[in-house]
Image 1 (cartoon, one colour):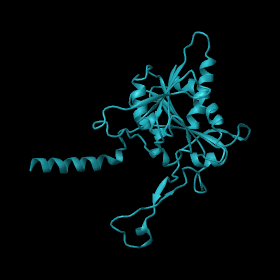
Image 2 (cartoon, helix red, strand yellow):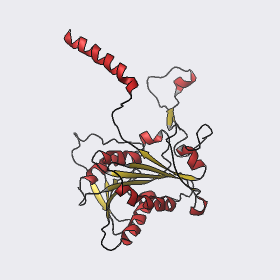
Image 3 (cartoon, helix red, strand yellow):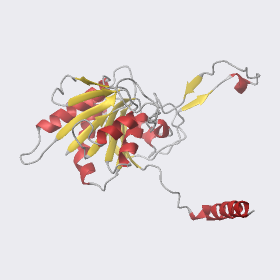
Image 4 (tube, one colour):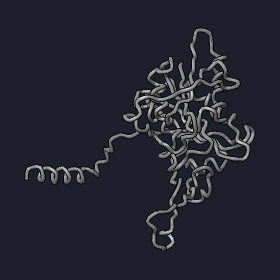
Length: 281
């Protein structure tokens, strides 16, 4: 099994270092006859909130990179790339750094990626991008706190690797872990994506004042990142509620695909008819 490690917090972030050390131990424990390998291709700085953005690859057809060494995972080649996580995932998946992976592991993110934050997460965006190339992926995030227990999240992630490799191609899992020690972790459950908010703009216009032609608009973090916040309106099986209750949440996700809801057939047929009449005229 060959693993591509990436993240959105940057190649020198503590979360990816913890994940790299866990993967290094997993490689060292490789059964005789098996083959395990990993490479790190991660942004050279923080690209949080970039989702699946790749940037303007037409005006900037090259990307700079630099080799790094991660303490405790010296055997895994690590590269910091001047690119967002989705682009790191793409070029890493294509074997640009000497290895074509079977699987992408993204994280460990500093802050939970639950609720609507899944849409905006660069951690999740990396595995969504890898899926477009046929790869399965695991996004790993841990609740933010004063002392983040990345090691707990890394240990849980390692347990998922073998099952994920044997799953159908393009299988994507989003793992969120509460920021607790191992003895305080209550377990792991399948979580549903909740409706927790991520960010909302709160500018002068929101208070009834006229909006200036130029200025600054403050952003208020919602419930999903970096803290979970109030989950009183969530069901017990929602991802945010699970974390607050002390459980890790594992959620299967999918990337963009056609909406096959038959309730939309009428809308599509009407729109096609209108366009056709316009073209005929």
